Image (cartoon, rainbow, N blue to C red; front, side):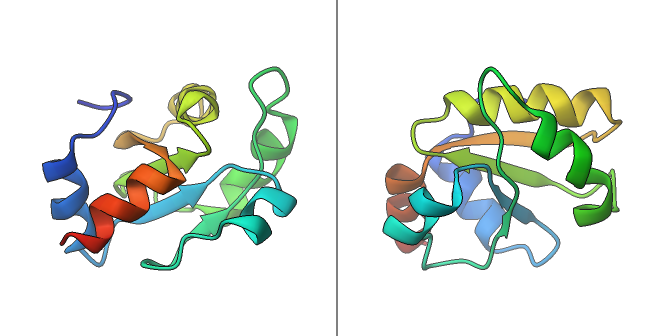
Length: 110
């Protein structure tokens, strides 16, 4: 399932696990406008056409390459880009959490 869009059930399972990292790849203004409030998260910006910020910071922000990581953004597209970057860096369990609104809904229903 690594890299594919996580199902509602998978999001619920992930939310129950303390070892799962939620990674927000939106911009700071996007996060300020609509933050994920139901779960702590790590934020590192990633753009579909420019992943340099994520590439520069990811190895210091996330050190356990075997930890499950649910990546989300506004719609899920940037999460796909971030997943590719993480795969190239050796991260083995990455899941596309989709857009923040859907993710928030799924997390609140747990």
